[in-house]
Length: 85
Image (cartoon, rainbow, N blue to C red; front, side, top):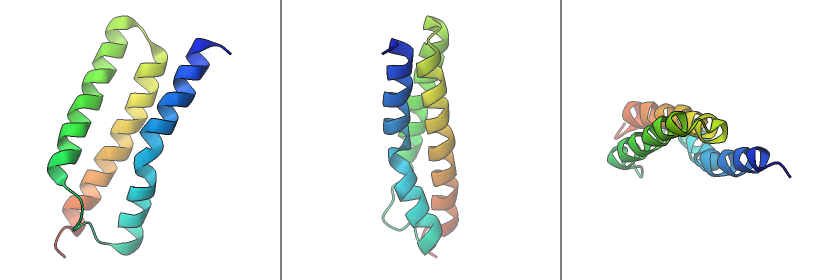
């Protein structure tokens, strides 16, 4: 298997790990159990991985972490909307 394909598959699985949480928050309109601070730290770290991916010219790192940023920023937005409603 091509190492880039392996990297993309691994990255999508780990990046997509927050999708069930996002679906739950949207469905229940409740984010009381989520830490917005944790999401901010996670988004910051993943953003640095994107920067690292550009420095190393590693497309799997860039793509999968960009996907992760989108998922986690969306979750943070819903967290801020639904927190303590």
